[in-house]
Image 1 (tube, rainbow, N blue to C red):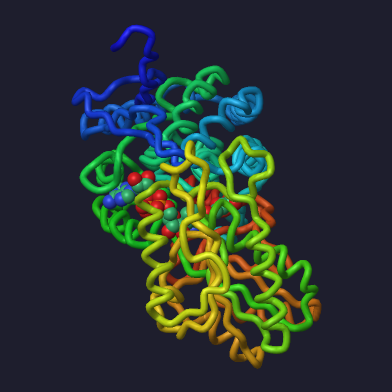
Image 2 (tube, rainbow, N blue to C red):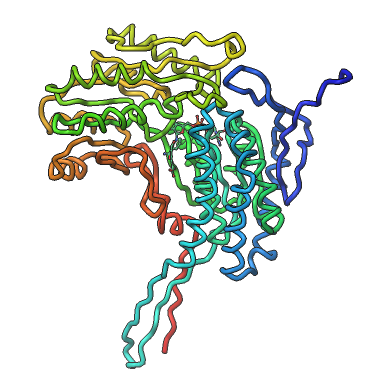
Amino acid sequence: MKPGKAAMKEIKHHINGQYVSSCSSRLFDNVNPANGKIISKVHEAGREEVDAAVKAARAALRGPWGKMTLDERTSILHKVADGINARFDEFLEGECLDTGKPKSMASHIDIPRGAANFKVFADMIKNVPTESFEMPTPDGTGALNYAVRRPKGVIGVISPWNLPLLLMTWKVGPALACGNTVVVKPSEETPTTTTLLGEVMKEAGVPDGVFNVVHGFGGDSAGAFLTEHPQVDGITFTGEIGTGEVIMKAAAKGIRDISLELGGKNAGVVFADCDIDKAIEGTMRSAFANCGQVCLGTERVYVERSIFDEFVGRLKEAAEGMKIGPPDDAEADMGPLVSLNHREKVLSYYQKAVDDGATVVTGGGVPEMPEALAGGAWVQPTIWTGLPEDSAVITDEIFGPCCHIRPFDTEEEAIELANSLPYGLASAIWSENITRAHRVAGQIEAGIIWVNSWFLRDLRTPFGGSKQSGIGREGGVHSLEFYTEMKNICVKL
Ligand SMILES: NC(=O)c1ccc[n+]([C@@H]2O[C@H](COP(=O)([O-])OP(=O)(O)OC[C@H]3O[C@@H](n4cnc5c(N)ncnc54)[C@H](O)[C@@H]3O)[C@@H](O)[C@H]2O)c1
Ligand SMILES: O=C/C=C/C=C(\O)C(=O)O
């Protein structure tokens, strides 16, 4: 190292309560997508580190964690939440460096939800009852059945890069509340906050081995090694549909349970009787928030013909009014995409839209940014009209700040268009006619429907996708269902 030059930060695995390097010394770059600069070097786990993490997690099931009372365990999880809040600025800095997202957004959504995910599920496991049934027996004395929850065991958690802390804790919170131990493989794009959480766990009194982190990529790397590991009892995954298919195959070996929260191509349906101010504001967020990198986002918008031109004009004006900027810019509405690689994918769809004959209402390219940010993964918010429904731009999840708007004439047509793809994660319906809104909500094939809102989250509600957008539900008691084994005890009286 040259004199005066600070050493590059290294991100290590967190195994059995210790930060450890990879035996292979294989490191990969963690890049700041706002300027293309390397933030840190990340250790890539091989089979050996993954095995050590899984073994630590298994041993911890039988250690102090497994012997704690529910009160002890849940009070530790409250301390984890408090620990995240106490180190709020460090989490915020780490999340925003990894993703480039505006601090104004991450400080309202990502980090607070990271803490809330521990509190909510700690409280839930204490308050949700299990069932019991009394039954008659031929001798007249009867029997009593009662169900108890037991931890599933070692849970493998594979999480994506778009809301790194939020989506990882959405799984780790309930998994630990239910008494499991975890091995987390965060996205290679966003390793920082998951690693920092290891320190918080330790400070909060979570016993060693309960929360482990291994870093690396998916196929033929840490992700695959973890999901294929025979000592992992359950796998919870959020990410792309294609990855979900691979993980499902891995889980089949040894019959391990899975929860899959996958992608989609969500439809917004805007009726002429909507409050158009609310519909524009909500569609803006659903198309462009987090630079369009939200699984619940709306990339297909269907608008009733009588308000189509007004809606397109106003969404264009709103999109053009957005400020694009780096995390520290308090005025910024939108940051960069997560990586230059992902920008290539998004821009390929921007080109495809033009090739397929779209009218580019706004955007369609790369914004001009100041010199210091020129190496970042910036992209313009983009709106199209005029594409045929079979264009890949309409059928594929792009995961960028873009949407296509198409007019419809009848409610039936809108429902048919919304349901036309093999995905079904979320949908947003805009109408002041509440009877119609209920009627349409009941017919749209998606796991999550918002009426006159978007991304309004109550953590007690079922969350997940229908069709190819996922398997299972998390949230509320549904998370408890996945992260516990229900055992029925039948006592002859
Ligand atoms: N339904 C939801 O709740 C939800 C939430 C957020 C994101 N998503 C979806 O996630 C996607 C964006 O995230 P992404 O690009 O990080 O997804 P991704 O599938 O590429 O990666 C997600 C994680 O899986 C790992 N992985 C990749 N290949 C693997 C393999 N063969 N075995 C094991 N692990 C593997 C990655 O390293 C990463 O940690 C979008 O499709 C989005 O819709 C869904
Ligand atoms: O990008 C997808 C966002 C998912 C959000 C949640 O899982 C949540 O709010 O719990």
